Length: 325
Image 1 (cartoon, rainbow, N blue to C red):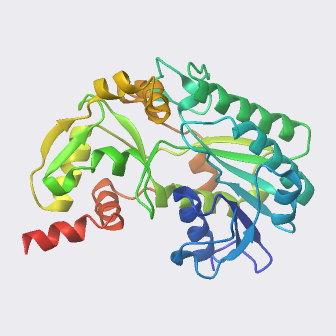
Image 2 (tube, one colour; image 1 turned 135 degrees about the vertical axis):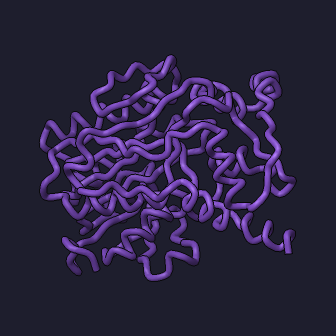
Image 3 (tube, rainbow, N blue to C red; image 1 turned 45 degrees about the horizontal axis):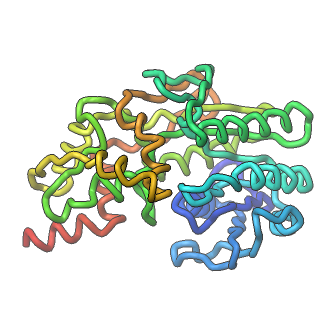
């Protein structure tokens, strides 16, 4: 059990079966918290053994209030299907109601979608948000809601902004869907220009940062908006880390954006991906002037170690070793 945690500290993780929710629930469990996982069917993956499973519907205010009853902290890992974000704001409003009813601190993972195109090359906590996509506007509206609730003295929110995920259990990120999709054939797939820095976040580092913030929750303000500097690296740097982990040279291929653009009017998921494609063609990185002052040392796994573990999580490292044997 880590400093600042008592047997009475309870956290409800919403969206606990998703990639982010799983990582956060496991991190809080390992840190000695009483963890309650809220999902629509009450089922959990094997690695969350020891976590209390509770059924709750984020689109039903009363259901969510019941599911979070008695907790000190609510982690909001809710994430609708990428092609339809129409439920984001209704769910956010219900989360606010649940946090208010239970006097719980609200922890929320922010994105870089808020900044639009052209995206600032360096994003600090006070960088102006100018969304140019529907997803960006929804994210800004959600953050405005959280800020208003905090300023009204109803719900405290601590937002931690991060880049694209890699690592952790589960799938569904650019790392596994694109970058490593042809790794078993010896190919690295670059989603954009190979010499532009892109903000990546190693998921266990993000989960650890949320734990550190929770441990210092009494010192947090009503509304905290923070950045987690992750790995702002180019595809060439990411490819080199993958090659080191795999112990082999990889061929370089480019993501066929023209195929997605041509079919996007007919495939909702591809349309959603194309709408955010600027993030792959515009350099950006996250910096923070405040996070270290609040939590001390910022969790940051070195890139080579993070990539190696991410490949092991995807069962790609063991497969490569077997082929080389």
